[in-house]
Amino acid sequence: MTHPDRYAVFGHPIKHSQSPRIHALFAAQTGQDLVYTAWDVAPERFESQVREFFGSGGRGINCTVPLKELAWRIADSRSERAERARAVNTLALRDDGSVFGDNTDGIGLLRDLRDNLGLHLVNAKILILGAGGATRGILAPLLAEQPARLVIANRTVATAETLAVEFGDLGPVEGCGFATLAGHRFDLILNATAASLSGELPPLPADILAPGGSCYDLAYASEPTPFVRWGREKHAVVNADGIGMLVEQAAEAFLLWRGVRPATRPVIEALEAERRTAI
Image 1 (tube, one colour):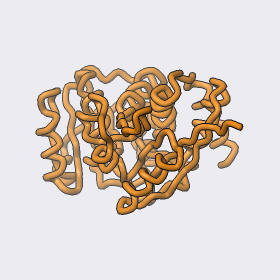
Image 2 (cartoon, helix red, strand yellow):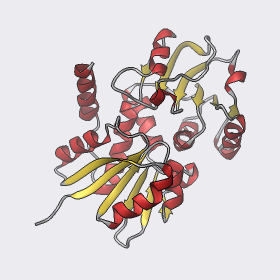
Image 3 (cartoon, one colour):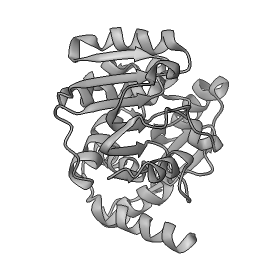
């Protein structure tokens, strides 16, 4: 008797995760035999839990907050985009027993912003809130779209400034604190902080969103996040949370693991319908 291949998402917290539902829909759509579960893994237990999961027959792991930079360190080899980001959200066990790390966040975000939401990023003024692993994964793909300006704002200013220097060869990127945002306006504001997971909102000037601008929260929840509610108040033309990005980056991970890329549109629509029913 053969058993289905095992996959998991590791995070802390993790109970809100839609990843098991997404990969179940992908598996049904593509005829793949697998089981995907969610594990609450604190950072100090991450390496031992990864070894335990792969040692007991697991084939792949997705890593979310706050484990992406730890996942980069644990990987034996990495994709070019993961190496650049120094953050990994997808681990795959190779046939030789080594662990390969990839970062599918950036391509997942771009597919949602451009293909699903119809946003144009060329010459846009973009603000990213937060300078952690999530931001690391999206900087290079965003800069490749040739924005006019990209600013990283973070509570710890030095972290944002260091990140800007690290990615400065790819385009016009700056790092700063929230206090220095006054007087500036942006066409697209991306919330890459963990604030939404705790019901909080980064401190933002009231007039920071340019007329016709858009807001996007990389986090997601069953109800609108504080940042999504803020975007509504500021009349953002496009105002979305990260459910589309989650599905798109998951599809890239599924492709890495299973060799087939599932269709994302029906999965996004299914999740949106389920959220509307739950509210």
